[in-house]
Amino acid sequence: MKAQTAIIILVIAIIIGVGIRKYPSYLPSYVTNILEITRLKNRFSSTQTTFDYDLIIVGSGLAGLTSAFEANKLFNGQKKILVLEKMPKFGGNSAKATSGINMLDTPLQAKEGVKDSFDLFYKDTMKSGKNLSQPKLVSTVVNDSHYLFDFFTKEIGSDISKLGLLGGHSVPRTHRPTKATIGYHLVDTVHKKIKDIKSIKIIYNATVCELLTNEKKTKITGIKYYLNENSKNVLTLSTKGVILASGGFGHDFDSEDSLLKEFVPDKMKFPTTNGKQTQGIGVKIARKIGIGLTDMTQVQIHPTGFVNLNDRYQKNKILAPELLRGVGGILINQKGQRFCNELGTRDYVSQKIIENCEMAKSNTITQYESFMLINQKAIDVYGGKVDFYIQKGYLRKYENFKVFAEKMNISKYYDNLIQTLKEYNESADNKKDKFGKKVFPQKFDLNDYIYAGIITPSIHYCMGGVTMNSNAQLIKTDGKVMNGLFGAGEVTGGVHGGNRLGGNSLMECGVYGRRAARSAVEYINTFDS
Image (cartoon, rainbow, N blue to C red; front, side, top):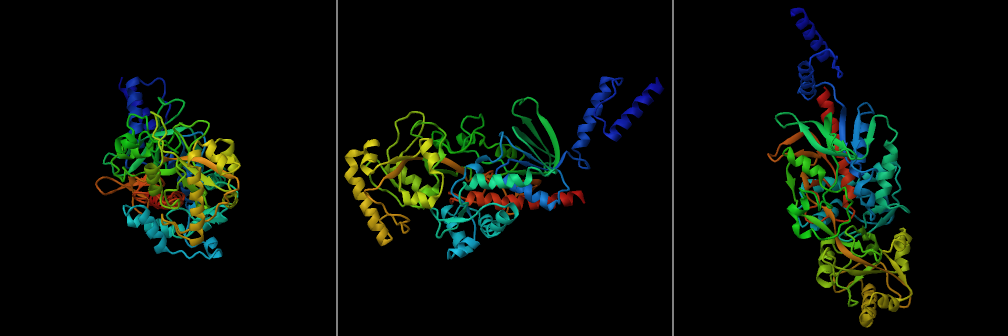
């Protein structure tokens, strides 16, 4: 009997020592249970020396993919990186971005004679954010935006060849490609750079459900996730560091722990431009381990979500690019009147639509509707795929303004419409109107054909999220850093304050995606040493 016990003890010692996962069948069940508990305990102990992955990144939008590229570069391809993506395809909401990415002091600005500065860009961002933004986070993102041009054009190979002016900006600083839409183009080019790198693995249809820490909750030790087709089979991975790049909560309507319901219940009936995956997973799992939250009541309503004329009251809208107004599109109400500076900040334009336009007759959705008018000259400058919007029922081409008024059932206000357009052309000549608009990209030919669509304010972006510092480290509610946990993109809060400037989202993804990678690499290298 003593000999048998000695043999079992010896086998246990060998198994623990070499880390065998499949235990010999001749061992009693109580022994194998002890072995498994010991293995799991060792796996996440403070002296752990082997990990499933060196770095795990949650999300494959621009912030996540940029983090993966930058981290792999700094690791010289010598560490294992895993990207977990909830959807079947990379890109997230970044892929939907259409207007551009803001950058400071670029060759395009110099070429076009644009006089921009750090102070001007910083002031525009703080003003748009209603001075609720954290100054250090803003100064960092504005300063580092200068380096994004070379990063994307030279290291990634992206096409950034056009420059535009969006609402709330003092000068043109919003960059985009010549033909493609900016969001998809950026995520696509970064993805192509990393998809064949052996040290980077991407798992799709994977939902992260928990962050794991040591007992003192001072550092990250792993994550739990499941594949979407089998949510009951929760898998555990150990890691030295995690970057959360999982996006916001702009489609979190129906979950039991809905963040929209908790923080902005008055916006629950608004439509949204966000994908269905945007349910605040990263915010929720970080919150559970003590990470602080900031600005959670600050949810941006974008003024121009396209209303599909073939399916008017659908909850999900696609964005009518801000650039359509930037190149000359104007907004009118059901009485044929303008009511705002179309190049004002998003919160301003949204509020003016709510105050001056009619709400659609629906019990299921809050939908204030305005008409957007845009002529061929503006379309040519825009350079986007307008045929797509026409084909999908978002924009329609009308022979003239009279036909437009008839089709939109505002014929009795046709005279108002014509007077509005005449006044707009006069204001363009004077470079100023009663709404404070000073930039008039196009004038309207009253006898020419016109493109028109219906737009409505829609939930677009969550300025609030997890608390971070300028090194993209996530901060606990006690003010201390959670070692090994970093964030980038919409999952974080503090950059945009009360209202985000158009083009600042992709910029933030690029800047803080790279910063999160650098901080993670520094931490992991220190961890290893």
